[in-house]
Amino acid sequence: MKAHVSSILLGVRDMEASKRFYTEGLGWKVQHDYGISVFFESDGASPVGFYGREGLAAQVGTSPEGSGFSGLVLTYVVRSEARVDEIIAEAEKAGATILKPAGLLPWGGYGGSFADPDGYVWSLGYSAQGEDQPYAE
Image (cartoon, rainbow, N blue to C red; front, side, top):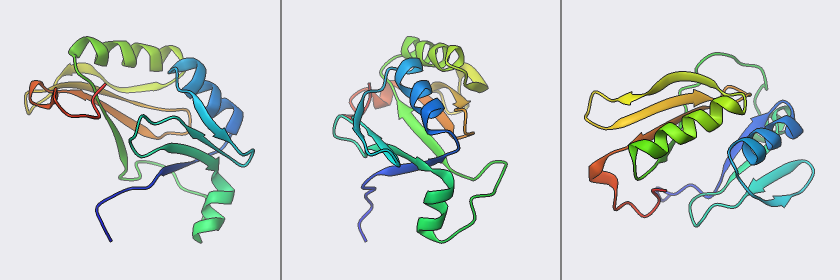
């Protein structure tokens, strides 16, 4: 198996509320809406999609129940500290829980983190060394 992720599926409790959070709150564009799942435009990176939490759990053979930190963090790299601040503000306005306000990080970068309405953790980061990364916004 190669170190590659074909897509990222997030099991959500309320499909419509999650779509609103990401489209209206963060400006994402829906690429495909299949009713039971939704995928967003990805600019060549691994696409992110939603699937009903119970249906996704059944598909992979596990329980949909769970709480607390899952050990999974979704990261998003940007090209400036100002963009980190903008996205944190957009997420908070859309209903995200700010876990760590934007600020300097121990390793010298700048970032912050938030949880979406289903509790998925997003970590935003900027590093002068990462400005040339093709996936940075």
